[in-house]
Amino acid sequence: MKPLLQLKISMVSVPKYAGENKMEKKITLKTKGMHCASCEKLIEGTLSEIDGVRYAKSSRLEDKTEIVYDEGKVKLETIRAALIELGYTLG
Image (cartoon, rainbow, N blue to C red; front, side, top):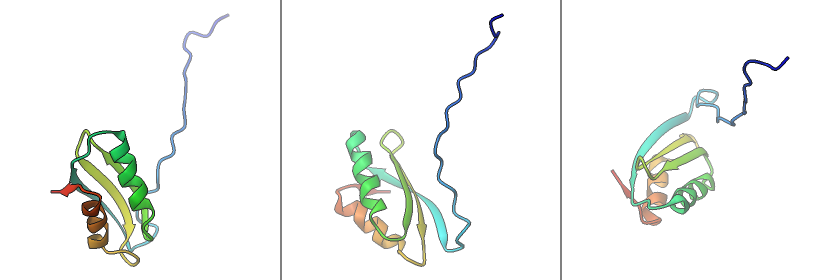
């Protein structure tokens, strides 16, 4: 007998949200100037190299970058400066 319904389940890695560390903060920055997937990866890679940034995800379609960072290790201005140095405009 064949099963009536077959389900495919895939596991997706989801970062834990800030909260474990009370100094962690989640922000979304309006990031203009991304044109392709390489722009997204450049931003994510650059921000992830900054000590204190735990997670960064960019979307060129939504013109935004989501970031989880430790306020005790890195200042928001440092993150903003890194994006501006890459040539992106923040709104």
